[in-house]
Image (cartoon, rainbow, N blue to C red; front, side):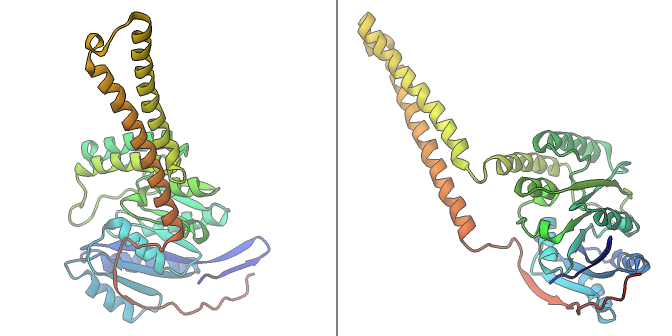
Length: 338
């Protein structure tokens, strides 16, 4: 459910701040207090959605105690650790606001930046993305791979964002609710949204803070994950709705080469009288291989088309499993706008 009130040029939104948490017992209470203080200061209607992504420490116990005294705090407890994308997807699905703000739960994102996101949303943007303009994390393992990935993503998507990777973003619900998150696609939501519809995207500088406690769950292996995600996102952007266009083109190319090879054998036979004993049997086998490979690619494309059809017509499967949800936000009561 969502609420929206307009009077003149003013727009009153209901905001949901979604935060996935994994083993953040040392910082979760401070995060909650800072979020409360900032959102209360803004005098907006809001809820905070904490998603416990299978934490093995006291994270959930702490936020459960916090929820007892705050009806604006909603808890979503997942049955296992489904990763950042799964945590964000669960939080977004259980959020009630017409504007959804997502952020990390390790205090590397400052709640004090939220007013700037809200200001841009109220200017009419559909997505507001954070930009870690002055990065403080490792040069070799984080900054250089991130810079290369962002440059490649700008080239593939045509979207001029400096920082695709940060979780700190704000979305209008009618935009984000059309995107199905899975894998590690939380980094590329603006790209997926732009591919599916026309959206206005803004980028704002945010603070990049050294993680105050503990160590990051990400290492150099994430670089390879991001690289494969870029390939996947490019395929989905260009060929998701028409996979036969890709596989059929490859199949036609291979099949065409195969028939050209057969034509060459035929010409050699007619004009020069050359037989396979002279030309070699390998050239004939190559022609057959190319034709059969081309046929297989076309059939694979048709099969992919059927899978896409089933995807759109069948039920949608979530990338997470919820154990329980605590705290339902009551309908807000709006005052009169001055």
